[in-house]
Length: 250
Image (cartoon, rainbow, N blue to C red; front, side):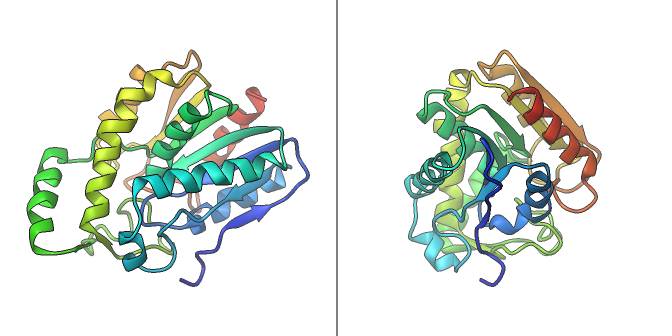
């Protein structure tokens, strides 16, 4: 897919920023934020997660183990360039960030979780629908009314318009079996940012993450927005908040 390439900006900085994109999306969603943080002097790396940026058929061939391996390999690559690494996850990329931090025994310097899912809006209905839908079809097409905000889509983002039902079920299973039981193992500073009216993620997700994190330093930052993606153009306030969070925890 044109525009799905990874982003790597080497500023020869001791501080590295690893950016993990959301499910069905690509590093394109970090275009503005990566440029902003690079201008601040940080080395920035937004890898392409396995199965993304090519075709939904390729995504179907992958599993959560492939996604977590992509995240870990990207961290290790950035570690060869920078001594201290902050992780920014967008949507499901936040869940990968939590997994990676647990896997690395809290080695990262901090996490910025943007629109992190724990509960979707109409969560149980979605689970039931995917269970029954999966018996009839292999792919789920994003509704037109949500396509520009569904999961991690910005107005000009490069992402899949339809996604394998199998993988959607794997995402929900990851939230329930990996993210929720292990939040208390996260001990590093965490900034949780969420839209005030997210059409995809239930707002109680942010509160749940905040309450159950093992971190002593944690904060929720609300963005006045009715879109799931909160890191596109016009999000300068959030960008400044992210920079200050990094600066305060270096």
